[in-house]
Image 1 (tube, one colour):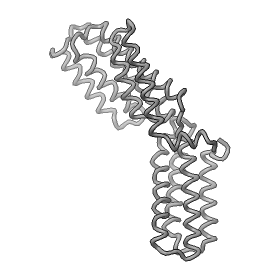
Image 2 (image 1 turned 180 degrees about the horizontal axis):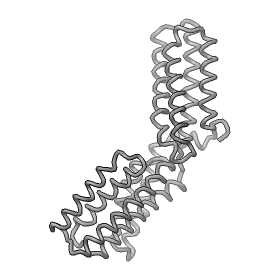
Image 3 (image 1 turned 30 degrees about the vertical axis):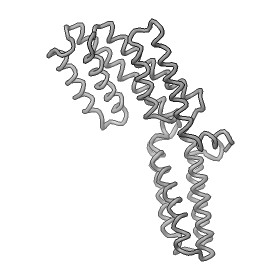
Image 4 (image 1 turned 60 degrees about the horizontal axis):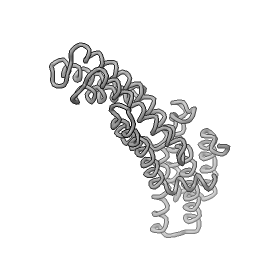
Length: 270
């Protein structure tokens, strides 16, 4: 773990805000170019960067957003060419169909986000005044440009990877757990132990929450994610039994479980 990674982790909120500012600035500068429908670029940047703080998750969202946007652009263009315009029965029907498709696929983890973007983008493209086929195409292009600006800034400016966050959380949680074992071993008061117990539990829970997104930036399979989640659950179970077991036994089990966990993530060599 180097100082740069620690710095990014410690100042995550400020750095993420700065990155968003840079991306929005770049997007807003396009308003001074001949690019048609340019404001959609900045709108997309704000939406994408507010929901995907990590490089891996952002790459995944940009890819899915691009697919959804292209599909919506094609659908909206066909509607416009067929005579659809804002507030006409054809446009209303097209938007309702897009919404139904989006809601149908939302539960699907692979295409749910892209389907949602398809529905939202269709409504946006067809509902605003001046929805000609040219305007629809340019709005679609601008949305894609906005996604790639967000991705570029995320990768170049203080890149923040999910695996790094999990590494730091794991190291700190393990350190707190070892501190708790020492407190229990020397007979510290229950009140003194509770604070550390809560910190350890919160660390494990946060890691478990982040695991599903890890596959978007690392070659982690679904079965591996389930096993990693199981190892975290075993460490949480060990935490609940820390007062009823000999300290050396707890240390040994923690070292074994955490060793398996870090080995699966390859944290010790990344």
